[in-house]
Amino acid sequence: MSRKDKKPAIAVALPKAERKPRVAGDGENSDSKHPIWCLGLMDFDGPWPWTIDATTMREIHSKLVAFERMTWAAISGHRHHFLTSTSLCKAAKDRLIAIKLDDAVDRIYSLALSGVERLIGIRLGREFHFLWWDPRHEVCPSQKKNT
Image 1 (cartoon, rainbow, N blue to C red):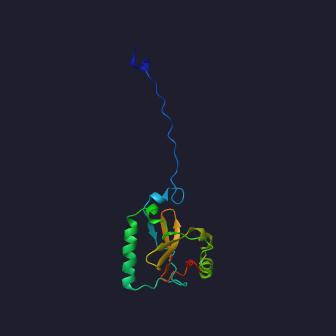
Image 2: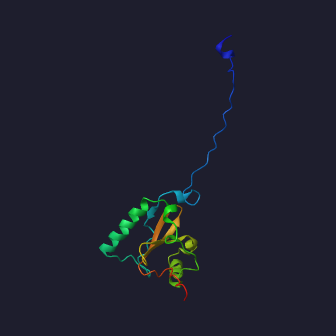
């Protein structure tokens, strides 16, 4: 019997590998990932411009570096969260329309830096696109209890 005539004793049919394209954004489990900071949408002309002194910038930088070591699941919670369109102040809604980002109103996210200071941006998957520096908690003012 020649080599050509020999058949393997056990024939194993390997399943075909399923190929799926990887798409960044909401399709991935972004909560298990570390944040990516994106600066292209920063709004310098609206009610919450990025006019920050060097000391404040160092404090923001320090907190963002700390967030980079965390996953979105660890970051998200009571103080850091998506904002609802009904919780945004009128000026924020109007500014989103003016800068043509009103279609992203359901992706607005707030990062608390102190009792009142907030970084407001658009969260797309693991990306945080900075919009506004809100040092007085005006974009989404909190409702005081028992008032």
